[in-house]
Amino acid sequence: MTKRWLLGATIVALVLSACTSPSGSGSGQASGSAGEPVEVFSWWTAGGEADGLAAMLEVFEAEYPGYTFENAAVAGGAGTNARAVLATRLSQSDPPSSWQGHAGQELIGTYVAAGQIQPLNDLYEEEGWLDVMPAGLIDLISQDGNIYSVPVNIHRANVLWYSPSALEAWGVEPPTTWDEFVDAAATIEAAGATPLAMGEQWTSMHLLETVLIGSLGADGWQALWDGSGDWASGDLTAALETFASVLDYTNEDASTLTWDQAAQLVIDGDAAFTIMGDWAEGYFKSKDLAPNDGFGWAPSPGTDGIFDFLSDSFVLPVNAKNEEGAIAWLKVAGSRAGQDAFNPIKGSIPARSDGDRALYDEYLTSAMDDWAADEVVGSLAHGVVANDAWKAKIDTAIGLFLGDHDVAAFQQALVDACASDGACS
Ligand code: GAL
Image (cartoon, rainbow, N blue to C red):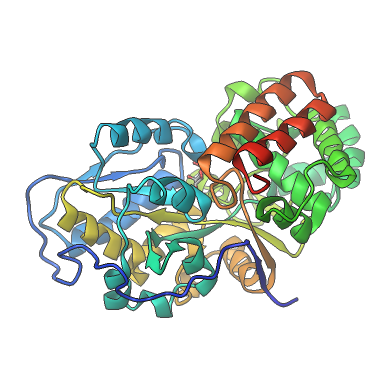
């Protein structure tokens, strides 16, 4: 299959130097300077993601020994807590040196729209990044000829994780459709385990997006975000009904668990599967589990050949704390050395096309192959397809739905969200 990007991004004519990048971006010197710390804000605190950040920090400290690094990570998967803290800081004109955001509408429709981050065109030219970053990804972080942020990785969201030995003991195969999942669920429940481990609310948005992609296909999913789709359609009703039935097979304590605690249920044999982005592989490896041994993976049901994508991307804020140091951090995040230190541990593949494949394990090389061949769609839960206002409305609707399982009311709320804050407005 030939790779297609189904992201609805406006193709921008990139005009290098359309805006002048901040001073210091061209120095290229490896010495650095003291002063305020280089404060890097993220939500990478769990096993795997914190370790990946530490590995990239080692590269930074080796290349820029004169700077003091300050890790401003705020715990909470998908940035649920961190982004609230960041919003408060931005409202007080107190930005860090850089923060981890998501390529796509979270960046363009939120931070760029609010004038909170600076374009980096000169840095891209100096570092040669236009030659090594995918054009489709550059489109997602650009507006009006200006490029905002430095993507450090590519994550896949639509992954079904399991324990090979547990499935073997139960005589269960990884399901390729939701019907197969329901068939397997009876066996799993009879063995006393939960079919599908889920965590706090954002993980149910993550699950919803994979169910919708599996039900509607890549084109049907994309149509919801570019204004060409019908949120009131019968196809979407059927997909939401599937979501409702899948929720019946999740753990009752989901709302009290973080994403990694939900993944731990799979490792412990208390649950058969979890659907999570491939930062879960970073978590599994932090627990000394090896791919195809301690953990296995498959595309989430119905999504074979589709890569539900997101990218962590570091920004340069307006009034960045220690701007020169921030630019040094961005250079490391965009470099081959930085990405090849970070991604093998984080459980992601480099955003750059020239990563050293030999450094990546069996799962990650399979992700590289899928990234090269699959149809690429964008994640809702991780910032690609909807800006914060639209996503917040959808999140509210999900919260209600988790309580009442009322498909008709849920679908109407999604129709309304698209009309008030989304592509239907
Ligand atoms: C995502 C982020 C990943 C990972 C995950 C769980 O939003 O892009 O890098 O951190 O949240 O925390």
